[in-house]
Length: 266
Ligand SMILES: NC(=O)c1ccc[n+]([C@@H]2O[C@H](COP(=O)([O-])OP(=O)(O)OC[C@H]3O[C@@H](n4cnc5c(N)ncnc54)[C@H](O)[C@@H]3O)[C@@H](O)[C@H]2O)c1
Image 1 (spheres, protein in one colour):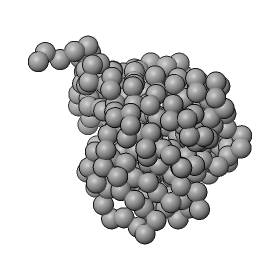
Image 2 (cartoon, helix red, strand yellow):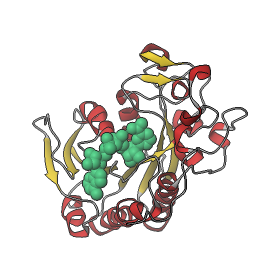
Image 3 (cartoon, rainbow, N blue to C red):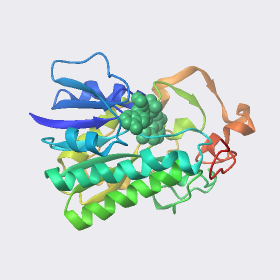
C-alpha cells in the first residue's frame, strides 16, 4: 500500500474524504490538532506546515501529498495568509523534490473565480477573479503547483473545491456542492492518473445547472456518484430568500462583499 501525507487532516474536508482514501493508502495525518477516529493504517502527527523541519520530516517516505491545510476566513487579511498559504506551500513542494514525492494534490477553491457574476458565468472557461486574500493565496498555490510540475516533473492536481458541507445549505451552493466520496475520487485521480502533468479540475458532484462542466476531470475519468439535489438541507435557502450578505449574485457568495485588508491593525 502506498503512503499518503494529508495536511489539515483533522479538518472538515479531511474527515469527509479519509474514509474513502484509507481503503487505498496508508495515511499520515498532519494537523495543528490531533486527528481523531483513526483507522489502523492512519497515523496522526501534530505539527504545523509553517515549520519547514516538520514538513521535511513528515514528507520523507510518502508517495503523495494531499494538501488541505490553510489559513482562511471571510475577511482574512493578506499578512495572515503569508505563512500557511504561501511559504508552507513551497516548503511542501520543495520537500517533494528533496524526497522524490511524485504526486501533489492541492485543495484550491472555486473562490479563485469568486468575483464573477452567476448570471452569464463562463464556468470552466472563466478567467481568474479571486474574491479576497484567501482566494488570492489559492491562485498562488495553483501557480506554485504548476511551477514545480514543469520544473521538477511532479504530477500536480489542483482541485477547485466547490462546497464540501454535508448538506447543501442554499441556492448558490447547490451549483457547486461536492460529497466526500466524489472529492476522494478526484483525489485518487490526482494520485494515480498517468495523464496528469499540472492540471486544474473542479471539486463538484452532480449539481443542477452546474457552474462547471468539469471537462478536464471527466477526461481524466471522473464520474461523480452523488447529487446535490439528494442532499438539500432541511433549512435550504432559495435564491430569492438569500440576503445580500450571502452574495447570491456572485460565484464566491459571501466572500465578495467583504473588505480587502492588507494588514489588520494590531
Ligand atoms: N470546506 C469547503 O467547502 C471548501 C471549499 C473550497 C476549498 N476548501 C479547501 O479545502 C481545504 C480544507 O478545508 P476544510 O473545510 O477542511 O477546513 P477546516 O478549517 O475544517 O480544516 C483545515 C485544517 O487545517 C488545519 N491547519 C490550519 N493551519 C495549519 C497549519 N499551519 N499546519 C497544520 N494544519 C493546519 C486546521 O487545524 C484544520 O484542522 C482548505 O484548503 C480549503 O481552502 C474547502
